[in-house]
Image (cartoon, rainbow, N blue to C red; front, top):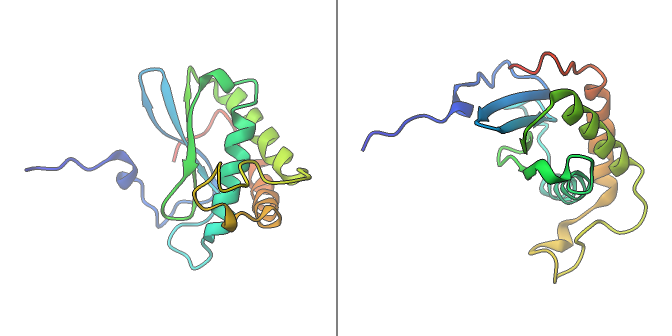
Length: 152
């Protein structure tokens, strides 16, 4: 059986920098590469940071002005970022909402969303301060992102 390479394996991860990229467009669904870390470096997100960012950002996205168009938000297995799938994406609006969700996570007080055994399969690894540190780091990167230039 011949296997076709997926598009994300065509991106040269040796030169990829943190930022926001359009990974692919499938009809009316755009997959965004929310790259928070430099690939293939020792400085990867640990599970607690990645898991907590996923809980916080997914919840904020699904409560944002684009909530009806959010298809999926989740962590990359390589520990360098997240994927966001949005229907009918306007890149300027997505960037605006991403910045807002990151900022809300930075300033969040109280429990992590989904912080119980009933709501999460590994809730004991959630750590808000680690997610907030990751979001503070990424917020600085987002200051430089231009919604008109989201290509790899």
